[in-house]
Image (cartoon, rainbow, N blue to C red; front, side):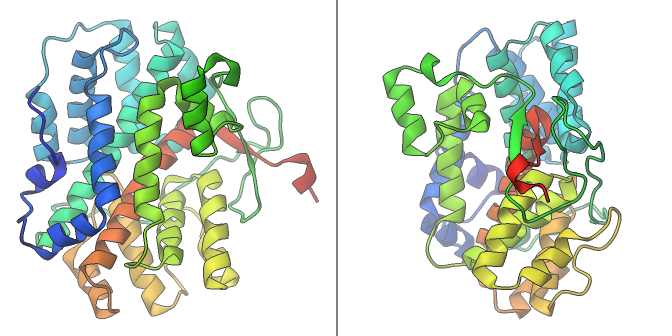
Length: 367
């Protein structure tokens, strides 16, 4: 497959002299490691999830997200893929993750295993679906920043979330959004630390992932986890541009749209700490399913929330009107790029957290 140094710039036809191109250069780590994640996903040769199946499924996921150019790119690489129970199980999993990730259950993991998917294959499958969801929202955001409009008119509201009182293993589950610190347990076994070699252990330790079930689960495909982590850091931990607090706010908004209580708890807590506006953040968390997420917020936060929520639905439906509202609040192209990338990244993060496991309330957090 011919490699492009910057796939998304090519697909979005970004003028290399434009403000958007300059802003992406300023966010070099995010740009490079987004590309690096793509290159890892679509260069690995293994029997757990063969490349022809990856390209075919990526094309389908891009189509579900309404990204025609991205779909065409992946479709160009598609060869004959055997239709089998394994392939059908993977496609069903992909459709659920694309449209309704909160509806995933442990049974859906079991269905994949019964159809012949390995643990590594399931992790790579979830990563691919979530990554193409991320790519799709980046492309939608780039088109908006170029001055184009999206051709969708979906209304963005708070999504639904889990309502069962207990987790699959019997722990106390969460049925409402919170800023408390939560636990998370996998539905698929995390890879034991002793099964990583010394170099792999060093990679986990470098990012603080060694003691996390979530990251050791994703570590079943460690090269991809490494690129994903570097992408995350390039988006959320860079100086200048959109204040870090508002990047965390965007992550919280996406998590409300997708119903991801765990991700929202982490990033709402960070937003509260950085803004000292805990009540406003909690107001966002308290929005019920089907209601407007920005109601009662300050004008700037209303504009931020409305844009992030609209970019998070499938297909994305953010508008030039919403973008211009943000510019009216003083956001320049770099800040808007930060908002797009922070929002898009949680299309990736939520889809992993919601479909590979679930949050629980630790014993020491119970009142």
